[in-house]
Image (cartoon, rainbow over all chains, first blue to last red; front, side):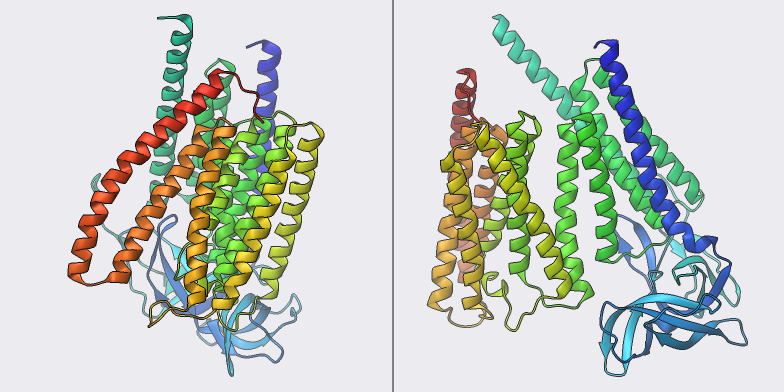
Amino acid sequence: MESKLKNKEYLKLAVILVVLFLILGGFLLYVSIPLLSTKTAVLATQPVDPFDLIRGQYIVIRYEIGSISSIEGAEVGDNVYVSLMEDANGTSRYKSASLDKPSKENLFIKGQIKSIYGEKMQVEYGIEQYFFERGARFETRGMEVKVKLSNSGGARIVELLQDGAPIRITYENKTLTS
Amino acid sequence: MTRNEEEVELKQHISFGAVVATIGSILIALGIAWLIALNWKDMPSALKVLILVIATAGAYTAGVLFRTNDYEKIGGSLLVLGALLYTLSIFLIAQTFNLATSLQANALLLLLAWVGILFVSYIFDSSSSLVIALTEFLVWISLQYFSFVELFKGEFSIGILTIIYLVVSMGLYGLTQIHKSRDHKFSGVYRYWTAFYVLLLTYILSFQSFLPMLWPKGFESTANVLVFLIIISLIAIVLAIVGIFMSLSKNKLSGKEVIGFIGLVFLYILLISLASLVSGESVFRGAISGGLWAMWLFDNILFILVILSVIGYGTRYQSAEIVNLAIMFFALDIVTRYIGFVLDFGGQVGFAIMSIIGGIILIIGGWGIEKWRRRLIEKTKEKSRQGYAIY
């Protein structure tokens, strides 16, 4: 191949790599925004344990604030802002909920309404899963989740807690055939 | 051995090497995907993402190096590896940040993936990358529809899904014509996928049990599904109109084909709409209405006709891939109807008799299909050797 054509191919490669890295970097930045925040909340949970073929082993975490009182005028699919209040143990619990975003100074988390049944509605916050290596063993009773919250209420999991300390996870020994 | 035969043999070796290299690329991606699923705790997440990003860049760089050194096919298969690794990078980032596992979340990840790969395929002029982008597009568009159903706890309507596939096939037909008018090699890839969507759509319509589920009783589509449908329909219609005009203006498309295409689209719209007449009927309980029988029979006859038309279409455009695709759907049709008859006649004795009869039919049918397939491919090659100017 002529050197001019080769240079053109290398230029194309550079363009491709820049664009793909921009997409990956932008995505990485977008999902990191809540982690850059200083706002932290510890949420009470009720977990279960499935497996995703593409993304591996994870626990599905059901939060205490996953089921809250219905708001007038709210519909399935709407965004909802749940204000939180710390109790004496440092766990953030439900204070109130609104379809309007509270002011930045408040501790609140953004969720999406999944279903409404009478007086109650189910809300998801995008933090209902935590991935770990296969063969992990840990006690899920009384587990809490430490999350970081962005100014817009977006949340990311920081770590799993038990009795206020990081949860102890033990793993099965791996072999080449496991 | 004549020079011509030597060239053919060399070409076969090259494409065999490309197939082996592509399988190798897919195996590497599969292995890495499995490692991601294992989610090693000993390796920091940032390092895992970095390794995958470097591997993606490495695969693309190696692909370009092979292409620039006259190993076009091997380079192409490395671009496939790069595309798969790029997709896996997105999923690994999602795993690292414990992002939602809902259908909508996965659909968004796939959207990021196929858009990036589509961009790569145009910059590198790489058909193999385009195939990966279109495969991910198929999964994305299906997942996107299912995620709307999940999110809004809406009733599942196969009718909406068939409309989506019909609309996509229209858009792909438009893209086929746009590329054909510019003598671009992607026209063959888009043509193949147009045929795939039309066959898939007709296959879905050929199920007796699906017809009453096309429009469930009392079904109301949610606003989001409608907006999604309107947006993709507008894009598809614009692509189809632009493509048809571009091809017609360069005399690369016959008026007959355009009429056939428009007629087929209207026939599908009519069939999908008519299914509302049998809405809510149960094929598993008691007698089936005459209307449902008639519709089912018509759809199955149509399926066979569409298969034959696609074979004709593949032969006309000298595409052995399209001919093979149509024959694969024909085999799928036979197997599906066979299982359907077993379910309908029921009982262990019935099952045994149907198995034996079906087995004999399948063996004879398989032999016949293989013979038919070889003859058709031979005919296609023959036309190709004669240098037919077919568009």
